[in-house]
Amino acid sequence: MNIFVTAIGGENSEQSAARLTRDVLSLKPAAITIDYALNDRRIRLARAEQAWRAMIAAALQKNVKDILLTPTGDLSANLENPNDPLNQHAEQIRRLAAECHVGLVDSLAQFKDYVRNGGQPADLMAQVNHTNRQGHGLVAAELLKRFPANI
Image (tube, rainbow, N blue to C red; front, side):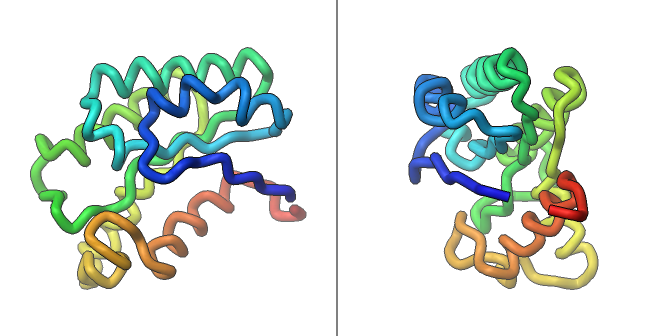
């Protein structure tokens, strides 16, 4: 499996949508992952939804499989509050995956399960809003379930 990382640090989904065809779909991938929710909190739900829908549609039009990722944890978020922007973006991503019939990796659910099972949120974080190796491992394990075992 060849993996190309085209992400730009600090980028939100609107910025990504503007360059998706040129920088991502031009590589003719079999699948793409879309994971902008942490940064999308700055542009809010409506703008983020429009950008995610545009990226999903562009990929599907080229017969590229989409895998949407909910955000990873953030130590400044209140994960117990459904009105916290992190939870709102995660719910929007789950809804988009279901509506558009595309793949979903629910990273936030993995983080919440880890905490419910006795772990501390800080165990998964390198800094307030960036995961460490253990946090990345939770997401990677879920992502790998979306690919055939013989890869």
